[in-house]
Each structure stands twice: as C-alpha cells, then as structure tokens.
Length: 298
Image (tube, rainbow, N blue to C red; front, side):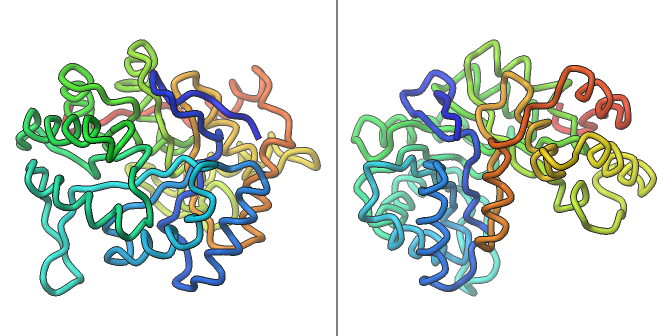
C-alpha cells in the first residue's frame, strides 16, 4: 500500500481509504473486515455520525479501539437526526457541532478524531460560525484536522478562502469528471487534499448493467465501462483500473471505497499490486468519456 500526506496536514493516510458507510450491521464481520484492511495496509477509515443513526461509528469504534494509534480516523457532522430516527435536518450551527462531536467521540471510543468533516454545506450556512466550531475543537485537542465533504464549487471556494481545511471529499470517477473543471487543480494549488469517493460509479464501471448516471445516458455509461475493460486484463482488474484512474490526478490524496465483504476488500487492495495506467491508456479512457460540468452551485 502507498501512503501520502493529506494536503498540508500531518496526517499520513493510505491511498485507499476504507469507506465505512457500507459496513454490515454485524460487529463480528466489522471486526474481521477492519482487521483484514489493516493487514492489507489500509490505515484510513471514514465514517459519519449519520450512518446507521450512529451505530456505524459505534461498531467501527469497537473494532478499532485497540488499534487507535495505528489508524487515521475520520467522521462527519452536520446532518442532525430527527426524533423519528429516520430523517434528518441540516445543521451547521456552532452549538450543534460542539455537541455532536461529544457523541461521536463516545461512540468511536476515542478522545480525539483525526479528521472531522462537515457533511455537506451550502452558501446559506453561517460559514464563519461553523469554521469557528472546528477551530475551537482543534484547539481543545478533540480533533486534529478538519475538512468538508462537498461537490459544490462555490462552497469549496468559500471554505478554502476562509478556513484551514486540509481536505475536501468529493465524487470523482471516469463517469463523473466534473471536479476536473472546477476543483481539482484549484485544490492542488492550495495544497488541500482531495478524498475521492464513488470511483467505481456505483459499480457501473465494473459489473452492473448500464443505466443513466448523473447526466450521462446509458450509451455513455456503456462506453465508460467498455473503456475500463479495454485497459484491464490479467495484471489489472476493472476495479484496479477504475481506482487507478481516480488516483492519477495529483490533487487526489486517496480513493475512499465502500467495502462490504472480505472478497471485495481483496479486489480493492489488489489495486496496488497492479500497474498504473500508462499515459496512452489514460488518454484512451479520457477520450472515451468526455468531461462534463457542474450546472449548479458554481
């Protein structure tokens, strides 16, 4: 496994991150998956207080509590569960964040979070108040660094200008090249690490039947999957080709991949036993699926 500094932070993370949203609701299985991930070299685990109404944090915390010093632990805040336990309301207020972090710390069985992320964000948020909450938590030692999870160029620019974020999590794949136009070069220039999610495009680049995805029609989805197959082979699986594509841009620190089983974990971690895409292969897949652009939140 390769490792990299996350932006300008002191955090050294594996270039494949373990996306915990997909974890099964089974503590024994979570224990097995996280142990296997650590054995494979993954040290970056990403969850959120929203996942499973907090149970995802609880299971992850239980699985990793004895390995705390060897991992980089990330979670998210901002989606406040309503009383029904099923729906949620967006809340980026300082008071809520300062309260929510205590619950995450308790569930994660830790006294600090390595990377605390705002789980979204809009230009209507009290951005400076939200930033102040993160800065307060950093000074208190409850978090080491903070970032945002957002695909909105306007929000990303505002946070980059007004805060000390070290990372932005956003969707990026051969089928979602929107960040290339508005975010990747910008963030790379500012030394803010990008955590790419959705690199497999919900499986459409791998093995799922083609259907419309974002503003891509079925024909384009089929072309993308075919392009990935063409650069894959005995030495590089379609999963590895898709991840290698996402990781090829210098702005991308890591690809965060959801894993549900030991079989999936092996396929994902085999990426770093596979060769990188050559310049010719990269040109080939990019030509097959032209870039597209964000229509909103610019």
